[in-house]
Amino acid sequence: MKVILMKLRPISRFPVPDLSTIPLDLQQLFQKISEKAGFVPNVFWVLAHRPEELRAFWAYHESLLRRKSGLSRGEREMIIVATSAENRCLYCVAAHGAILRIYEKSSQISDEIATNYKKANITDRQKAMLDFALKICNCSHKVCEDDFIQLHLHGFNDEDIWDIGAITALFALSNRMANLTSMRPNPEFFKIGHDF
Image (cartoon, rainbow, N blue to C red; front, side, top):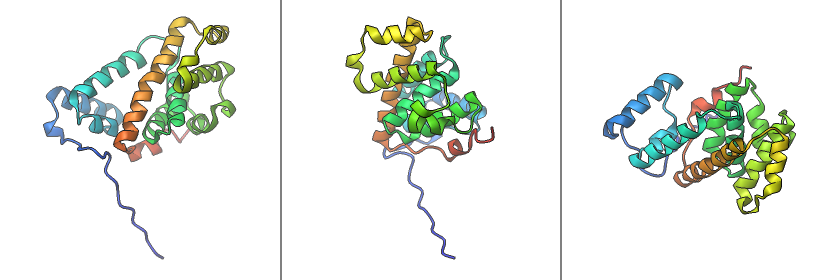
């Protein structure tokens, strides 16, 4: 039997700092995340190449994804997975697909949404949400009053609509940085949430 060994590629095309060279506040953030997740997602290592930008990204991420909202945590992750798939971002589909599987307690939902959310086993409300997210992702200049009317009919208020747009916009940045840097997903992401 012939064994083929794959050479592991680096997690970024840009230099990744050692933990000891990262500013103390970010070392503490890495420690906190590691304690919670069991590992440090590669996005933190890659973005630590520019500590100020990592701080800004993480502050907006936490402000947006942890605020009270009419969107469930699972719905927020659905937006990230669908728009990241549209932007062909391997890192964000893998990472947020794992989180989505956990929040929705479904081993297949991430694959369904990343492949074709219109056929996924989700509600019509969630499909309308993702339709709007993809419109923001691909042609935000075409957003009009009819979009708001349709979302209102599905029970979203204007603050929820802001959240859909803001999550899409933040992850447009994240997707592009992940693709720019050739950011590799942690192997752990592919193992999470498949036991439902």
